[in-house]
Image (cartoon, rainbow, N blue to C red; front, top):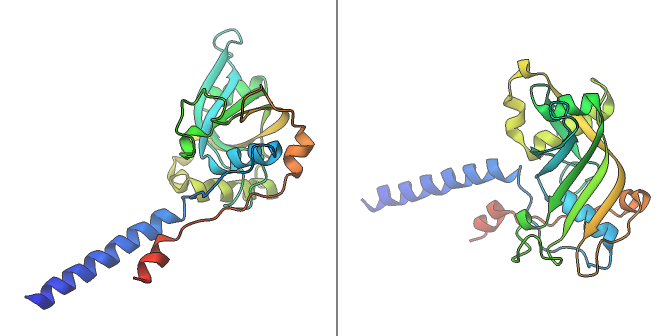
Amino acid sequence: MELQFRLRQLFFFFFLLTVLEQSYSARILTISKPDRHDVAASARWLVSQNIWGVLSTLSIEHQGAPFGNVVSFSDGLPGKGSGIPYFYLTSLDPTTRNALKDARASFAVSESPIGTCKRDPMDPTCSKLTLTGKLVPLDEGSEEEEVAKKALFTKHPEMMDWPKGHDFRVFKLEIIDIFLINWYGGAKSITVDEYLRSKSIKVSSFNLISELSKR
């Protein structure tokens, strides 16, 4: 009986490890955010650590009224983000149709979903970022599209199983303006060049599989 109990425990342990290992590859766990005075790094951190945001375009169905849509995104492989948001969008979605008619768009992310801010999302100390620019499709078969797909599918594995007949394409936001609030005193001044040249965010991940195996 004791042997059977031990075998069951062992089976459950390896089953749990398998599940965790599969889910771990698509998840990034952060340890801290940059110093608030380093505004470019703060903006890049927000983009690298989030997996979704609100993408706004100009509606062709509502006389150009702003249309906000919750979308998944990625700016690169874990720890190798470029700061440029990439999206996997279908032509069945109004966001895509809007962008193909008028590329002007903005993309907003917040610190709140990351879990490092415990205050109301509108509190100035809870960082928020809006990137404004042009939402454009990538050339199919291009090197950039392949890199973007890898980045998107790494953070969002289920995208690979989305219907092929729904005309999904990779888009990116060509950034023109950056609006960041990460403390009191209003929006911080960041140029696009400062944002893109900011050093890559080093992501420290906690490997639960490794930690469990040490016990």
